[in-house]
Length: 286
Length: 307
Image 1 (tube, rainbow over the protein chains, first blue to last red):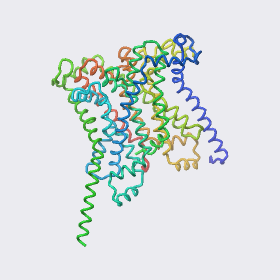
Image 2: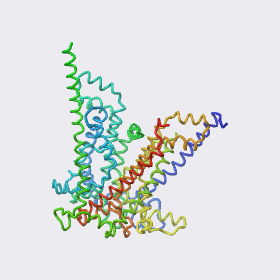
Image 3: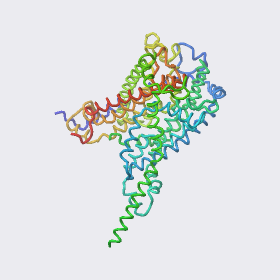
Image 4: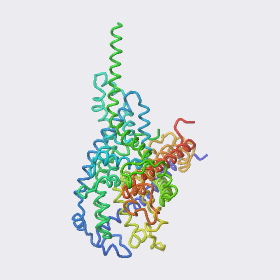
């Protein structure tokens, strides 16, 4: 009954796309508003901040607030400390997840199904449940107090079930003929992983490291319980202490907050090209 | 002839051996992780729940079910913390799912600057969560904050977002919704996997946009909705940063999440055994939610190939 001509269909499609665009523009404004508010607060004087009604734009853009903040908030030291945790963890997590994903995707061995279900099952396991036993293991068992090792070593242990799963799905989408040909040529399985599989799943490995980065970058709780001395604070721990020590100097708190946004944004800009593609490939459906 | 066959078989056996040896080697880090970082600590949390350990007992002392008895009969915070956690997770999960599915559907259309929009909605997720909560606490500030300014513009009286026990949980849930960029990416990926042929078929049948959404998009998205539902439930039930950094569980016990209570017992008052008994109950609560989801999922998840 309702067969439409091509033209009216195209018009309808166009109308829907443009209303989607308008809604997206409005929602973008809504979602960005908090970030704008933090940024504009970082450029104001405290008197301006405590004026009512508040202004959407600073009267003078006080970028020198940032200079002042950096005097009190040792951002570069905290950043270096954070990188000292994140860099080895990213490396360890990505490499071990790739190895495990390869074994699950390509190799035959006894106990594969069992191990795989243990692995996937651990995705459902809340991290918080193991917090106290792990804490006591690292601090009382291994005496690693005020050390980065309890934050780093776990990432050398497979890099997380989701990441293993993601790598496995990626590898399964690569034609098997490629590595079979290499087997006939006498390449070892390890050689195949390094010189055939890994180049082919570069984008998946980037996605995994991006996900690990976000996890580590966000992980206040673990950093807080394992790190005690101020010299070793990460950005997250440093920021939470900084806020507590400043009370109501909101322009300084907001500039420290805005500074801490930058490294994550930069990392995302580098990796984002691969991101949606990476998740699409995992075919989470099954 | 026989000789060749034999050597063939032995070399194949050799390869099999090499294959499984490589597999175990590749899996070794992951196996160590599963044993020592995941399953053994889980077991220890369960066992330590029966011990008094930490304050008043440097060496664990077996006390049977006393920790559990204390939790359910005399702990002034525990039952409240369950209520708070469940209330928050339900609000946050529903909000996150609706918001992120909606954005993903919009982003899946042929709109200009899609990459830009995607980055915008993903952006909150990549900011350090502590910074996000600090920033939002300024937005929620009762006299000079953005939200109260908007309320006064609308002629509504000001609200103590984080200092009023009525509003603290919804306020924190709103931040969780703002942070749901990763769900958008996963939904978007799912939408791009919906087979085109279904849309074409429904178009021939004369379905309009909304009907197509209801009969094609939504059914083929159910597995992804399920995945996001499960994962965001598990993540939101474990929320701890806002209580840790902003509210300290207050006002009163209104934002004392189970995880925060556990943190307080373990790391502030040094009652490790007791904290373990909390973490084990917490594990059971999440397991029950997960099982309920899995049990009901069969009736609403549509898998391709099923009739």
